[in-house]
Amino acid sequence: MAIPQSFIQELLARADVVDIVGRYVQLKKGGANYMGLCPFHGEKSPSFSVSPTKQFFHCFGCGKNGNAIGFLMEHAGMNFVEAVKDLAQTYGMPVPEDDTSPQERERASQARARQATLSDVLEKAASAYRKHLKNAPTAIEYLKGRGLSGDIARQYGLGYAPEGWRSLASTFPDYQDPLLVDSGLVIHHAEDGSEDKRYDRFRDRIMFPIRNIKGECIGFGGRVLGEGTPKYLNSPETAVFSKGRELYGLFEARQALREANYVLVTEGYMDVVALAQWGFANAVATLGTACTTEHVQKLFRFSDAVVFGFDGDAAGRRAARKALDVALPFATDVRSVKFLFLPAEHDPDSYIRQFGPEAFARCVSEAMPLSRFLIDAAREGCDLGSAEGRAHLASNAQPLWMSLPDGALKRQLLAEFAELIQLGLHELQSLWQPVTPAPAKWQRRQPTGGQAQHDGSPPTGFARRFSTDKPPRGLGRQLPASRADHAVRLLLSDMRQWQDLNGEEHHMLCELPAPHGPLFTWLDSQHQEHGSLPWGALREGLREHPSEALALKVMDTGFEANPTPNEDEPDPRALSPQALARESAAELKALLTRLLIERLKAQETQAIASAQTDPTALARYRALQARRRALENPPEV
Ligand SMILES: [Zn+2]
Image: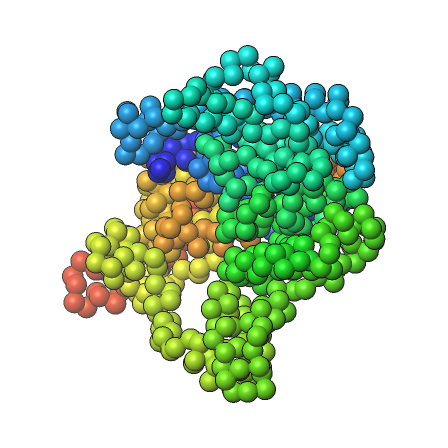
């Protein structure tokens, strides 16, 4: 489903990032901005700044930045569409959907209503299970026996599903309600000839509610008390629950993930809860399924370091191997992926109960780096003493190595494999990565629009006009890039200034060579369409735009140096927003005058040069000169 870009920008213009961030982070006014403790990295003094004028947040510590949508994605783990919808709901703006018929919209709204109802049903069941736990001494004994306190049980919302086939009937008087089946709570067998059979899915089990990132109950895991089978039983896939996407404990772990600098991925809910009991609240679990790309993507939204802690048995090793395959494409040089292998007879829960938290912490710190595990996995079953064995290793290793993103890690591993395989570095590289000619420099620097021409689609307006990468000739060359950068920064930071410029200034900015001119042309069209927009909204509209890189570069360095506000006293140097706006307007005016003067000088030079052949050039030269002098010596006021 596509959401129109213009709606996203309107939404970002209406939303208040200070408000959105403020729901999760305690913010304090410091000068024109708000400061707080960064939710994305652990810190003691605030370096996380939120700008109400730019509608943008920025952390001076870890560099994370973005608008309200970005914050919801990064912090609350939503995807783009979820974040837009969440924000739209907050501000009461109905989300228009492209290319959808009224029937489709109706279906979508019914599906949404249905999901909300399913969540309600599951929530109600969770609360009933919690109540049952209070009156179930054997279940309480069991949890105590596993070393769990009442506090942890409450924190994770643990409950108990009583024995009996229709215990839920006491919570849901209409036991025939199809929602009970749709939510996975009740199993329905329709048999020929006999009457319908309906019964509770979970019976005589410890219940672990599975919550999504918003904290809504979307399903359950149930563990038998004794020796029955299956030991663990999960909710089936439903409209609100998908095993391949959800991680048990992620909602509960959010706070801890900010303090610990890694997320620990285990195999079971019991591991998660037991680890939390022992002080490792940063653990999550996959739900009886192998780790998926969506899992890993989600994990990296919350932490740059992932430790996979699987059971010590053969199944655990297989699970680790799957996790390796999935994690490889995400293993950039700034991220860390490690594998924790416990002794064969242990899972994290049993290990920490037997050896204690210090021993477990040691295991984590000694966890195997991805590079080691990758090499081990590739050489498994290969006899490195023979050429055949080494060739086998090479063929095992190639797909793993190819999955890695380019970077220092990938290059080092190439060298390690070359040594193991006993091939030269370049030989191995040419074996694994058949030569594709590197794009020539001019191709690499071509703006995105240029590529459109290769796939046969018509170039966009910008691409047509700026698809050449030759240095623009003529007037533009003489303008120092830094001044134009500076103008970009001032105008993107506070677009309201655009309407205060005169036609000559607008014209001059839009005619600057790429990437500056196209950026201002775009800004002008945005102004006509939406009026002034905060940087947070402009940033969204710039995605894929040929001048996007310029805007990001300029705005990244443009964030004011960290004001490091004093805890209690306001910074005396801090100016009021009004004073800042006045200062910035004066700065822009002076800057534009400099740019105009430079442009006029260049035009004068051109006019003089063509005076011999063009009889009108001299008059043009005089007019240009007069205009320049007027700018250089403004009339006294
Ligand atoms: Zn930070």
